[in-house]
Length: 310
Ligand SMILES: [Zn+2]
Image 1: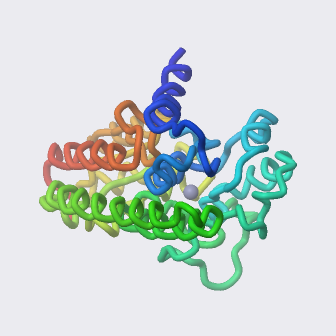
Image 2: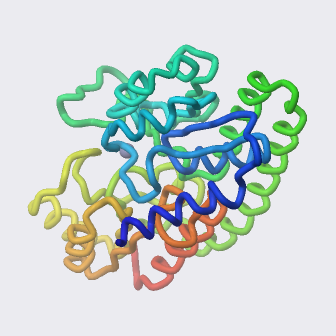
């Protein structure tokens, strides 16, 4: 029941509120945030849907036949890139038997192109160690400003595929960027009192958010991206947090609330469930409301801390 209700949060707004009578472009994406940006940029000419729901781990989406079927008539597919969806997209795309959206085709978009990527690895990357960020950190959609680059990129792609509506796509992207700039000024003001504060995140998916708002990342509940925490890791991290006065742990709906709460409680702090993907929690239906809720949750958690690492 819980998952059904969450399902409706994601699909109702995207499909009902903005569905055009007849879409000129059917756009599918691997992530809800990309579908949200695509819908803003495409406006009445586009129908956008995401394969991964906001409450699912975007690294590990089951490659079900229903996903392949959902994109068999898509004109465009927008991937996060940087191998965020690398575990399942290489199965789902060929499974759709849709030649228009295969990598290399005009309808395939790598949204990370044109985005300033953090944590690009130097030297050889050993996947044997379980690293699921082999090309750099793929969670750039946690930074409002980087979504403006995605919007501009999508406007170019949509204009190439549907030249008749190019002026609308350019105008919509400009309006998106302007709204994001105004919103960002508000979010920066909300986060200003916590500049330099340290937090712990479950997964290493907060680097772009931390960089934008001046937070320090103290550690992660999972010892390495994609590797579940051990009791020893939790105990050591809790000890280090206590010593440094770090009290806030954040985790997404698809990560272990239990491990996050255990760590927070051992460190004398709080664990807060957050959505970094649109649709992950109530009231986060598009990228703007996602950041509204995310910024206020993080600010509220940090406001309650006593002491803390500076
Ligand atoms: Zn990741």
